Amino acid sequence: MVTSQRARVAVYPGTFDPITNGHIDLASRAAPLFDRLVVAVADSSNKGPAFDIDRRIELARAALADVPNIEVRGFASLLADFVEEIGAGVILRGLRAVSDFEYEFQLASMNRHLIPAAETLFLTPAEQYSFISSSLVREIARLGGDVSGFVHPAVQKALRQRYSNSKPRS
Image (cartoon, rainbow, N blue to C red; front, top):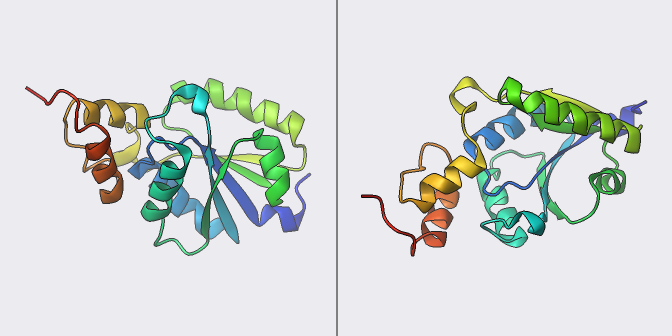
């Protein structure tokens, strides 16, 4: 059971490689529900991210700078341990489509087992962001496409720099 003190702190975990307007939308809408929302950038070096964890944290901080009660932190531990470390009572997860549900339900069930003191809260992004994913944004950027409608300007610039040696669009 979530205590009232823990319920005031939520963690929004992800690799955020890169953070997209969908992530920003979700975090911005969730932030007023809590005293503090920790956007937790997972190391996930085993996934072979386009950006290292420090760069992803930097980009997330830039993209979320206007939201006063959001803190961006990196973590390389089990999510359960990180949630305990920061004293969170809520794990925020986004659902873009029905296809996300099965995986997210499995994660929520495991987290309930590992962290009984925390609840998982699912939010859906605004409709205009429901199709955006980090992997699609990376692919578009890698192929020289315009990602300005999908990411914060700092992220767009970072993607342009990251993929500047990739083959341009024909």
